[in-house]
Image (cartoon, rainbow, N blue to C red; front, top):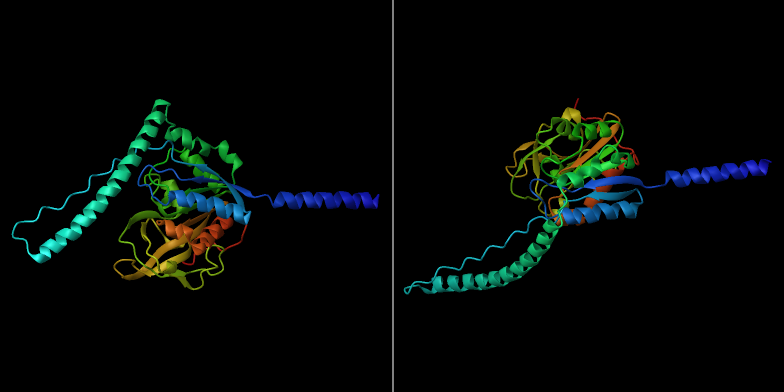
Length: 322
């Protein structure tokens, strides 16, 4: 009897351990109604890979519906003809410009061929009835969200056709995870509950710069691998400036102590996290460029943030400024 009971307990314990180890389920949204980043395709691959490699979560996607209308390439502009009285310097400059023009013409022909093929595919798609934005976003219905533990807005922009905007905010607040990268803060500018949930709103950016990011929490899962600071491996990145941001409402993770362009001193947030009701929110403004998404350091950054939002790793979320 004792042996049988022990066997049952061991079986139940093993089953519980297996169940506890099951990966979380995450819905990744990459839909845009405003500017669309070329890095989105890379972002999708990276998020799926870090989820699979870590075993922490699996992903489903809400992607841009249809192929979108292709944009016809512009003809390259031929340099103005030389005058009969052109000197040697002018002739040399003209020769260099003509070489660039010849290369541009070759690229134009390749782009035109691709455009023609893409246009044909798009016409077929339209003839068959292209899926609508609302159809794509139906995956974010409150009924379907019951299947997920967190949602990620990866470089989304504009007003997305959420089936129930306030319902989605309440879903996060009820105890789910939300993470956003880069232009996730350039989303729902006219919907205040989203901005309040995220903790800040995109206000603009200048030219891409090499910057020094200061680590405000070296123990948080999202920033524990950076040390005291990180300069994005010496690469230029598009650094956002924010409005509707208050230090008293978020736990800062990465900041700049100088304006990325003017170099004026100040506190310029880059990444943060916050408790939202019973839910958890993680945001990083990095991720404009493909090469940033491909960096091992950035992948550790977002993996740590996502795992924290899912409740898989512990981290402080108390604002440093009261």
